[in-house]
Length: 386
Image (cartoon, rainbow, N blue to C red):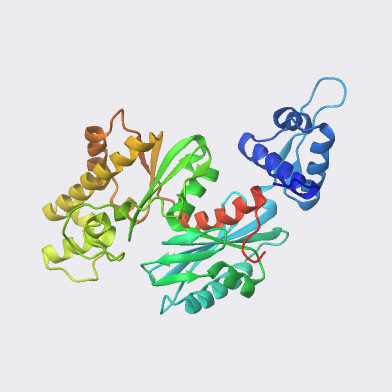
């Protein structure tokens, strides 16, 4: 690959920004020592980052003689990102700073999952969020959009989403044309894992799994700072492992997928059918019934935890993670689901099983979408259409 001055500058910028993000406040001398760059090269990059507002200078430490080093930190509050998470019938949207701290949020509904309908809903939601930007909050870095599916992240294309019937939809580019801002897109579980790596519970771990149990079941692997996407973007589709050789038809068109038995809608529906209850009762109703001693509710949650745990143990035995972080609607069930899952891991993991830690933060999935735009800044990547 030809390395010209612009490429070298971009690589140095990425190196310095990520080092400060990971290590915290560092002086110019610290950066030169850690990166191997010359003091002049560090000063050149830092000058640009200061002018653009991405880093700020802190106070020098008291004491000592001579010129004391000035610490440099990421200016997390100096820029903004927007995250849009696509669900069945709605978009969860957040405006965040560069640490994914939520400034404002909203949810908008759509009648049809067609790309044009979702585009209009996303455009309207982003416009509403931008009207909530605080004064002197900084510029918008970009927009991240996440949805369940196979995504060509580099091209900004949804290759396929069985849940929404999308095929080869260049959604990132279409949205960018409407809002005139950089747009990134990714599978929602992989975006959730990215946010955990950058700013969440996974930031202190080199290797971890991000398990998502909701309408579907996904399990992303993060290893040494990289979210593993696979050769074709199919990585992490735990819900589509074969659980039984017979059973309901999955949204993917196959029989026996794990999520047809133990996704949150499947669990709740089995409880309602078994008790002869109406569709107005949801997962919160099921949890309350289980806490009150409902045998069917407790049995279904126990079975789901055990079975998901068996398949999760196979992933653990292949990846050897330090911890499993769990998100999605299933966190509502708490230890009614997770204790049986942990017992399965104790039984089926090759070594000592990793801790299973639920993440109950309300807006973290949409913040995971915002993390796509923030990663684009830190990695100096161009968004689709940028």
